[in-house]
Length: 384
Image (tube, rainbow, N blue to C red; front, side):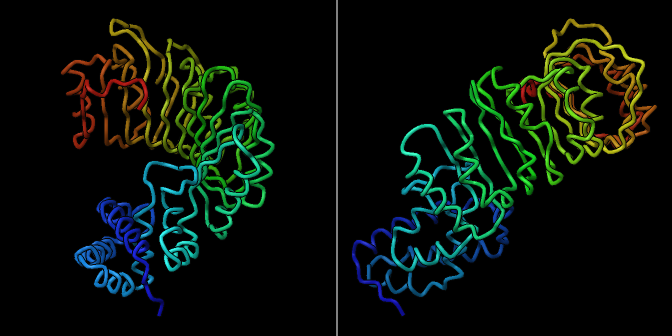
């Protein structure tokens, strides 16, 4: 058995374990698969260690902890606020600096090395790339969640670095800056979730080229701060987004709604945000899979027109609707849509910026006696 004689190491372990114990109360079992009972056991073991005041007792206690318990504690030590760049003061890097045993355990835990933020375009790229590669190697084939930020608008270096790990990447967040080039998402064969951020309108073409064809594994796409219209959406091939089940998008015009449903025949959840104007169309569309629809617009409360949003759409599997900021609610249009769709609506939420009447609300309850009906003016932000 290893001994633990270093006073410096003892202090470092004590401080680090205290930080872990403070963080262990956060329930992240959904993220790392640790059960509630396991979490209780981890907390109890941490308290036992921290209750020993003398270094001698502390050293004895810490080394009696089984590797399995330390491994559970290490999982709870991971930062919870997204993917972060490697830093010596953050786990998992921090865990490797405390003592030899902790380093060996941490390095031998692939699940500690699955989330990473990578930046290119400033600083010493060779040194940074070596650090990133060493980090990713420790994931040992596990699925990866990565955030990529390219400040020099050239994805070449990042693409080269990630080539050995491309099939491991299941979740990806991309930052596109002004002047950025495209990055073909079809090359990420294991990708399931994609989030794209932009710093303005300039990268629109780069983004649309990047997502012109998504891999068959893709299930969720979120396009933040990026306005797309019918013309841009019409440039995509008919089956470009066929694998998506969740889509969050900002659009310029309600005429994008039918196009989105055609692009995503397997979609079960759609969040559509934008500036909406009334549309007129004789085209009819049935989408059998959509279950959740969230809409946030930017209309004045005195809008009294018919949006035309529900006139040509039939959604037989729709279960939840949430709307905000679209002015006067098109009650008769929506009621006709519900009758036509014969959907099992379970939840209807009217947020701020939506004008309804008590009589209209009562009619929905009559149509769906078990309906969860909510009117909440505090739900008024443009983005969900």
